[in-house]
Amino acid sequence: MTPIVDLAEWRRLRDGLGDATVGFVPTMGALHDGHLALIRRSAAENDLTVVSVFVNATQFNSSADLAAYPRTLAEDVRLAAAAGADHVLAPSHAAVYPDGYRFRVTEREIAAVLEGAHRPGHFDGVLTVVLKLFNLVRPHRAYFGEKDYQQYLLVRGMVEALLLPVAVVPCPTVRDADGLALSSRNVRLSQAARAQAALLPAILGGAPSPEEARQRLVEAGFEVEYVAEAWGRRLAAVVIDGVRLIDNLPLPAGDEAQMTRRTECD
Ligand code: PAF
Image (cartoon, rainbow, N blue to C red; front, side, top):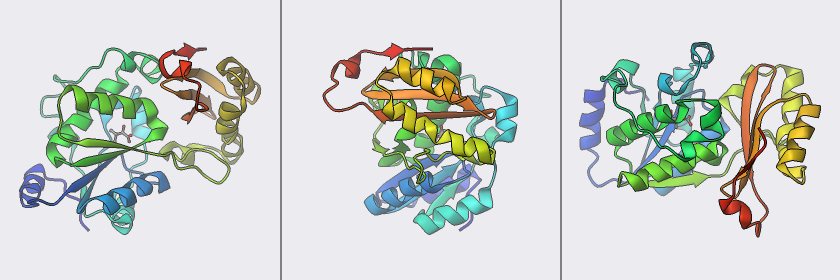
């Protein structure tokens, strides 16, 4: 399979797909088993699956982080095809942002807290590129991992708000055997930090309160950005070995108060 870079070529191909149902998995590449689970699910539920590989500069908060982001397109195409993708779309920054990012999508409530508070402008970049990719791919279903739970909620909200004809499908977080959520950033962890990182989901799930989780994470050597309960989940962002990790777990069923109340211990 050859990745499609040229948008005119992609549009011709998309116009020729007729009535086929199209599943879409947007990615920034560096594909891991979490992405592959999304691709497999899309391939099982749709006639055709499209994967985008686009390192979206507008959602990064630091140019160093953007520069350090792994770029492995040839391997991504191979893995996506093996998992059942029919097309990989890999457009250039100039093609996706002909306006130089003068136009953008902003959400003003969910995007202002937690990840949004710690990464100003991040969700503007995410929502803007997802809308552009939806317009290009015109998918029937789009697959998002629950590891980025706030992102999933915002994409779902944007689809409802802008009346977009796409079903947003949340997919469970894929974890390594020791519980660490798969992430393209994990490869940047030293061996010692990788072993320690598995304490993040263990503490997040095991502590009786977000305050206690924060304290245990600090004691375990993490720099804690936030631990919070919102939207029926307990969520956290930490830094270890200079690598920022996020995770979240569902709150036990029946903790209805947390479905609406947000508690945060920054
Ligand atoms: O989750 C990601 O990898 C990115 O935020 C996304 C959805 C591909 C947009 O760039």
